[in-house]
Amino acid sequence: MADYTNLIEKTKEMQNAFVVASLTDEYIVDTWPMRNATLEGKEEKLLEVRVFNDKKEVKLFRSDVGIQSFGLRIIDDDNLPEDWDCLMYTADDQGNSRKDYQEQYLDVNTDTSPVGKTMVRTTGGGYFYLPVDEPRDAQIKIKHYVKRDPDSGMAILVDWRAAGIKEA
Image 1: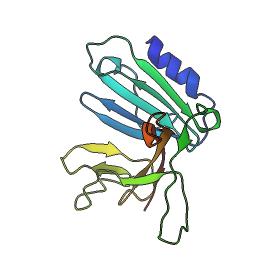
Image 2: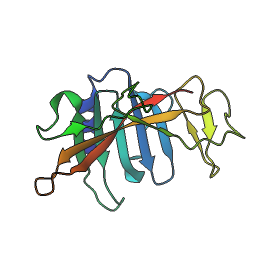
Image 3: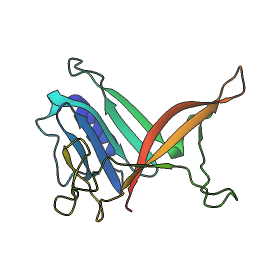
Image 4: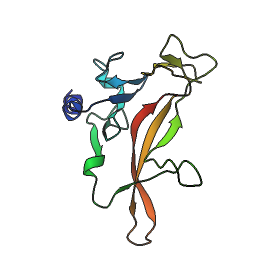
């Protein structure tokens, strides 16, 4: 598949990266290059693939499996559009621990996970591999990008991306 080959080409230089892939019947979380899962032979079921690290995300996506071509979007923190800024978060009221990402918990059923060391069960009953040593309370790091609305002067969200996986 040419679109998937393009994704491989755009991500071959990425270090310390992860992948999150959504298929019609499967959810994949792995390191990049993939060690515990594969997308080979699954192109027909593929909806979205995000390959990301703390500096960059390459996203291959389509809204429906009936659509043959994929969109490709790259956000590189070292090469953002001039009018974009990365939203900053503060961990406490005193302004300590500023960071450029938000942490969101992954869907891990803590009553039944892990199944093995890194295979986790979701609250809905499905399973997925999580490439961390301690999967309980694992979080995905999300970066949000804003720019100033020219009419109102207000900040508007223009995009977001995955930026890493944090262990508990």
